[in-house]
Length: 349
Ligand SMILES: *Cc1c(COP(=O)(O)O)cnc(C)c1O
Image 1 (cartoon, rainbow, N blue to C red):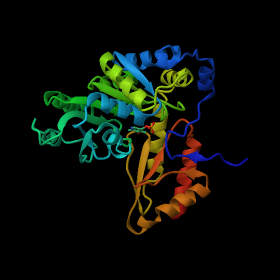
Image 2: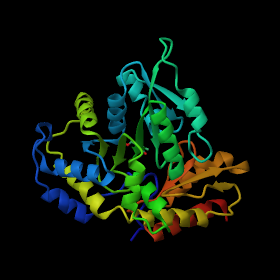
Image 3: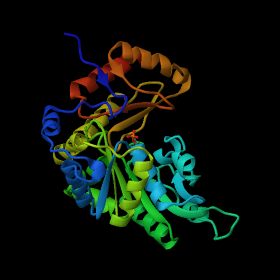
């Protein structure tokens, strides 16, 4: 038998587990546009309750969730302050500007992924007709797999409140952050997720990444805010019908696949350790489930060749700007050893 592919391109590649498929098949359904899909309603109540919000909205993707979030905080001619590398600035086709006429004000990140408090404060514009109205601070946790320090999140969100900005968290991987933050402290990852979320006015969470659902994200906020987001979702074409089948997968993920994220983090650490000391490779120690690797020195131009070598051996990764290896529930310890072996083989190490 040939070895299965070790797919480290993203934590979005996961297949629904048998238990998740059973939950999907058994889900009671209705028409969610009429508000009467019981499985969608149950999921929205569950995630809002877990994170300490009044309400939540189930949406098809994280991108649409962020779009609904920004367009529900901001009007045309407003701006949101955001990091250069954040998904809702860099990786969503400029949606908030394209669809909402909301201008981003991107800031450079510090080396730990944070936005300097002084930079946030300096970016807020005076109330004057020359300027867009600064309305919102958007943060992301984890950011490219990096855990933002809790103390920083508290400071940045308190500063935003003082500056009159609303606060949005792109928590596509919030549960990875919560699991990493609770590691070794005895804290419950679910209460850590809530502690992080409670610093914000709105939080977006993806079910289709490490949590292992096939589709879906949720946006959480106040009742009144989520009512506005529901209008944006409709305009964006994201109001679905018997979407309870998808919501049931997400609910299953929340019930069964949160704590296990620690295994993905352990495998990411093992991968980073296994690649240590290879000449030409610079490996960033992972906080969570994403390992970034840079080729340096004479190896610098070899990333396409490395990716091809790996693919030939059934190990998939991406190299959009840095090489990226993402662990998830369909990656085993044996798969990680194979990836390490294949990379070492390429370098003759
Ligand atoms: C993946 C991701 C999104 C977008 O999710 P999609 O479901 O792919 O649209 C948003 N934010 C972050 C941080 C992400 O990693």
